[in-house]
Amino acid sequence: MKGQLFIVGISCISSIVLADHIPRTVEFPANATEIFGPYVQDSGTLASWMSKYPDETPLALMNIPGTHDSATWNYTEATQRDLANVTAGDGEPTYPPELFRCQSASIMSSLNAGVRFFDLRFALDPTGTKLVFWHSQALMSETATVDAIVTAFYYWLDMHPSETVILSFQYEGSTTVNATFDSTVQLMLFDILNSTTAAQYIEQTHDVLPTLGNARGKVVLFKRFDLDQLPDEYEDALPGMHLSPSLWTDDSKNITLTYNTVLNLTAYAEDYYEPDDLGHDSSAAANIAAKVNAIVAHLQMATSEYFNHADNLFITYASGEHILTWPEAVTPQIMAVGDGNSSTPLGGVNQQIHPILKGFRGKRIGIVVVDFWDQPRDLIRDIIGA
Image (cartoon, rainbow, N blue to C red; front, top):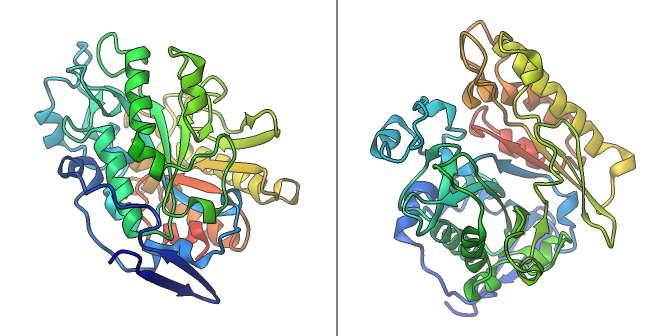
């Protein structure tokens, strides 16, 4: 009903928000389901957990669960077979789908479970006509386009006006023969993220994280790309946080990135995603331990008094793999949850950081990005600190 007030009260804090504070201009796109999942309304507490927090809360001081390679949950053997005409189209061998799958739950399920940061890897589709989602050589869907997925997020936000979502977009290389992030692809992305509809739903500040109140019902855009093949005014026109890939050190335990040089605002990231320094004969347990050590060190940094103010953004990627280990590849799933036998007796990264997260309750840890978030139970709740 237009103009209806919804009063959301949890604990001692209540928020009053207009259900139509953003004009309803979108419908849920039918072609989004292969990546987003079918729309499911959920009234559980984690579907609206941000309603607990007052409007003046800086996003940089909140604990926000995220998913890495969020679009990969539906990449199965059947998907790979159906898309065999484009997978490994440059003549490379076709690798097992478990090397590319980093999630087991849809974006829709993740939103309702409390996830608020989504890592989205895009590139041009094989026809050269639309932007779609990839993980390296693996095409996730021919029909679920970038445009459809962002529209699905807008629809979800209309239904959950107390919440915000952070969408991190990154160009995915190594997709098809001669694929590049050229001016055509950059302009296609710009048009999606700078449309009239996008302007209503994407928070319009540049290189400054808003407060929760300013971001409710909206997308906060993280731009892990450069529009360097377009005139400067295109980069200047697109809102969001510019986390340039030229400043994002590859496979690093501690990235320091100044995202606003005028205000001297800094992002600190851990993205040690492939422990190649351990060697290809390293065990799954050793790879998991190395990743856990990097995660814990970064979380300790985030919680330290020295960094405890709203000008610092912390992003910890708890995801990883080591696919060149022999005789068994450490897939994203093995890294996240172990392989279920005696070779990973302590479980995966998720099981090992679970009690550590409980120990940080009440402190700022920032954005924590995981694979296979649904194992163990309550991992998302413990990242939030709920």
